[in-house]
Length: 224
Image 1 (tube, rainbow, N blue to C red):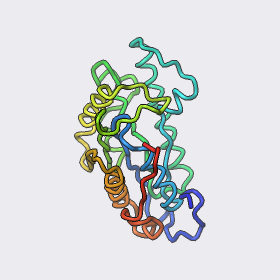
Image 2: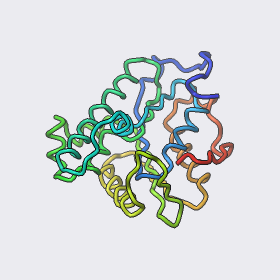
Image 3: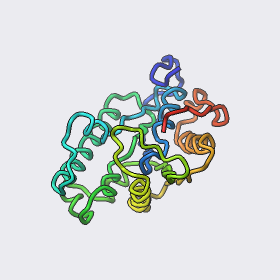
């Protein structure tokens, strides 16, 4: 049963716990898709999973060019789509937890110039964006010899490039006061269980009756 289809008798109520945002981040191929799919299937409807803004932007036809102006335009577009996704989830009034497939800070890892230029372009600051999120769960990208998957059509990075991006993402989120970093392992189910446990810690107690214990989760093959 998918989280979005859970029955309406979930005991939690919007007034009982104002929604807060949790970021799931990490380099390409880290396993975010699998984790988010399990959350959709097993957590109640008050745990709202947002789609990845970059996939919306590039999947919708935004030019993906190699020039610096094109890369910068793409990151500004992704930032603004992310903001609107989060605002939508807040204003719909259903969410106790808004689980974000990357957050607004991720763009800095893909930004070639000084970070201050990015924050100036989008009229905010790193401090303001870090403060938007209650917690950050970072899944480390596996190396080429440990399962890096290049099959996603939106994913263009080689294993080496993915590892470099993963390191940059570690750096850009380093100042967040509530961050969990989950290393890659040969046993992806163990990594998945750790990620679910970290997310469950952010879910209100009244919603936890709907989520399976991490040990009950099987390996969702092909989702990484």
